[in-house]
Amino acid sequence: MKRALNTGIYERTGSDYLSPQSFYVALALSVIWGLVATAVAGYYSLKSGYNPTSWVEVLLIGLGIPLFGIFISLKNSNPIISFLGYQLVCIPFGIILAPTLQQYSPDVVVNALSITAGITFVMGMAGSIFPNIFSKLGAPLFLALACLVLIRILQIFIPELDFTWIDYISAGIFSLYIGYDMYRASEVPKTLDNAIDLSVQLYLDIINLFLSVLRILGRSND
Image 1 (cartoon, rainbow, N blue to C red):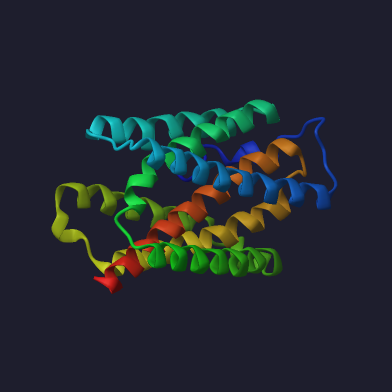
Image 2: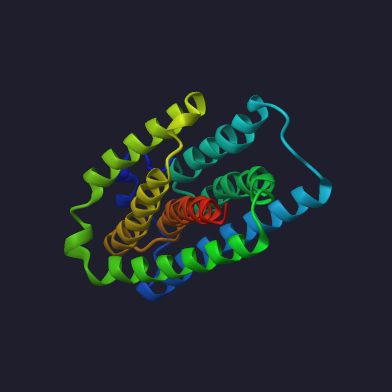
């Protein structure tokens, strides 16, 4: 779910060109908006007492709707429609993640948020400062992500595969993806639609990094 099927989407041009400064501001604000939307959706999900009762429900809200949102966002050149697709990613994630966060103590959640924020800042800067390094990571990261997804699927059916080292590898993959996506931000045409499309990718990087860090800290507190 992380990667676009066609990276050529970032070569699109349009009438929504921005200055480099405005592009990065739009990118940052869009990422922040997504994270806030997830937090708000999660808050109201908890407040309402919602808790998914079946795998079908989990897959629909946590996978089906977000995948549809990603498709809309990344395959459309209209920034308004792309942004609406982005919301179909952020809001369902908040709804489905809220019950998961209840399994952890507030201290663990806060620490995971702090660590995620720190890694995001460092890797975001690294991706911008060292483009020659991150430009070579696209294929290796995609392969690593594909293997990780396969392992996560196997873990559903084979709980014994739930090893701590897998969470560390997951955190490493998504940390590097933050740097890689920031490198891509420096290379794409500076349009509003591309800023929104990239914010979807960065949002997914950050959310997945947060969940990996959360699992690591949660295990250490057990």
